[in-house]
Length: 274
Image 1 (cartoon, rainbow, N blue to C red):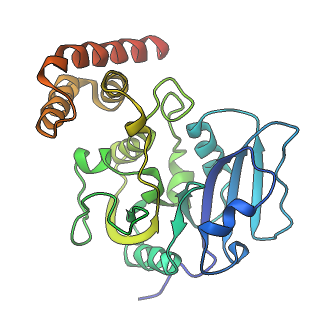
Image 2 (cartoon, rainbow, N blue to C red; image 1 turned 120 degrees about the horizontal axis):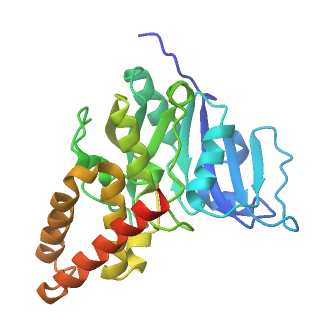
């Protein structure tokens, strides 16, 4: 098999905020100097606190907008690598992450997006992943994918003009769900998305979901389900309720409040997207 992708074809597109030095990159690459990789940093900051690169392999876009999805979109817009890896500024890469990503894309050259596995800080898998490569993803698979698991082929992005929905994600009206919406949009455009369960990085366990109370979570879920598939809104809400009750994330006496919050999220999303 001819290898289409080789070392140097991967570009890490990283969102961060208020940086004026590259010190934060040092723990992200514990096995070598960060300048050995192509990195595009989107630094949401102020005009008085700019990040400037003296490394040929490190490019920086200082942005004065707020919102994670806006940062991701700037990254996709300015990326030059043949393969793009979406990254956060608090993860730690494995030494073989680049070779695993390149190998996967060479094995599946026709796939637009390949998603990988992540560990928590203790070395345990972040969630349950398939035991082997999964080529057919259902909606539940896509809804559970984290942004830092996602790699993309630049050619597919250029053809589709794919973007993150700026109504979703940290710093926006609805604080979660931007990566699932992005992948759902790719799937609707008949693009292949697969999971290759090789661990590429570790990441702290705390997530946006953990910081929200159940009403806030259902508010976002109502907007999210309306955005991805309004036809199956009620099915999605009741499935979420079923699993949350089963896992003791909410109590029976909170169901009405959860439904009310979900409907409010749906209404607010429809209002802002009129």
